[in-house]
Image (cartoon, rainbow, N blue to C red; front, side, top):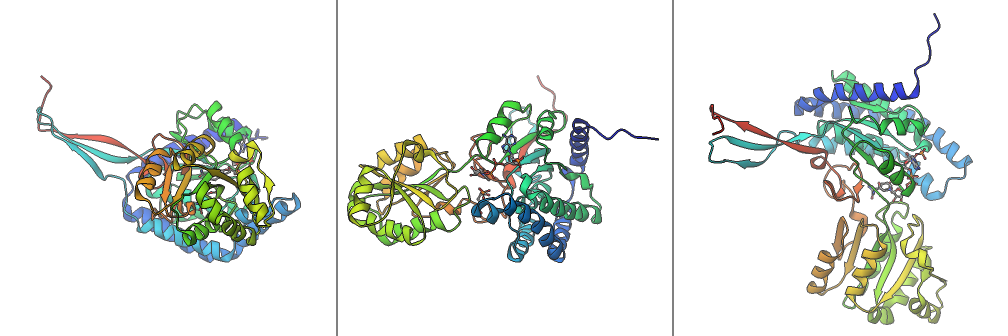
Length: 427
Ligand SMILES: NC(=O)C1=CN([C@@H]2O[C@H](COP(=O)(O)OP(=O)(O)OC[C@H]3O[C@@H](n4cnc5c(N)ncnc54)[C@H](OP(=O)(O)O)[C@@H]3O)[C@@H](O)[C@H]2O)C=CC1
Ligand SMILES: N[C@@H](CCC(=O)OP(=O)(O)O)C(=O)O
């Protein structure tokens, strides 16, 4: 008998329902059981390196054919080292303390009841992300360890890589006797499926969109489910009048050049007038030596011109543009307060840093810059779950409720009150 193919909305609804059903089991799974799945997954990733490389090569070939930029191809690529570090990341997550069941508060009201505030998983988390295959594994591992089921929707360019990785996650779950529907991938690049997912508030408790403006706007406008936005990174480095020159140079180069295609790389270099007069030429030269295209305001431009360093004049939109490339805008300011205002106006509340030897100035900057992560004398490139010791991250939340900055195991939990009584009744 001829069977009608399942429609896309039914498919997405089935995935969401299956995830909810699986979530009850994962929520109460023992730590050792979850760790056994993660350990199995790490081994499977290592032993499947060749197959993962082949699936990734399919994606890369299409990406090259479609003219993806160098930065995007770099994001998409799964090298043997990256495959090994994915497995390592999964083992790290296994070694982290289990957040589920942790007591985070206690109340003892006069009635005599004993109230404990206890961490519990959110439930089902839907994650929509860019074409970076390791995100599939990071999110699956973090959701599993925090007792959540997840529904993953990666970027179209990484479709084959993601399918291969998700199959390994599901194999690990099955082999360790856990419901494999705890981790599911939306099996199509058709964006219509996303629209259906955003309506599954009956089954899905939280949506995390990692991406640019189009994605965030689409999700916020169409979701019936609470959203934690993981938006772009327009990050700034401010070099104060009392900055150490060598530190300023090394951090500027690191924050721009170490991996320019990621959201925690800087797009703006904000420089105090007196520091600029003395040292901007040297710092700009170090950046130019790394191939960075400089876009300068009039004052910075005059300094670069005198030093014979090439630049373009920055336009107004440069201050709020995320290049994700070797391009940097330079702005001269007359005070730390002006730098703070600039960052709060043009930044995306992601990661911003001040370089200074003056503690009072640094403290003012740390308080006043309204971003998820603020730095004093360090590179913005550290905004990363692994670097923060969280094992991995769901992403960098640029939202305010309830997660901010790298979102790890604790942020994947909410809480409940457990009330222990001895027969008390309310008077
Ligand atoms: N804060 C954080 O943690 C992170 C922030 N980012 C930011 O993401 C941005 C760039 O990433 P990029 O790779 O271009 O990601 P995009 O925003 O283009 O894509 C990310 C995901 O969103 C989907 N998507 C994009 N636009 C829409 C839309 N209008 N409607 C529905 N779905 C959409 C994509 O699907 P499809 O494959 O169909 O295009 C993909 O799955 C940068 O600004 C970067 O800083 C990236 C990662 C982490
Ligand atoms: N975790 C990252 C930063 C966040 C991220 O994933 O950014 P992106 O490469 O823009 O998807 C890192 O520094 O490695």
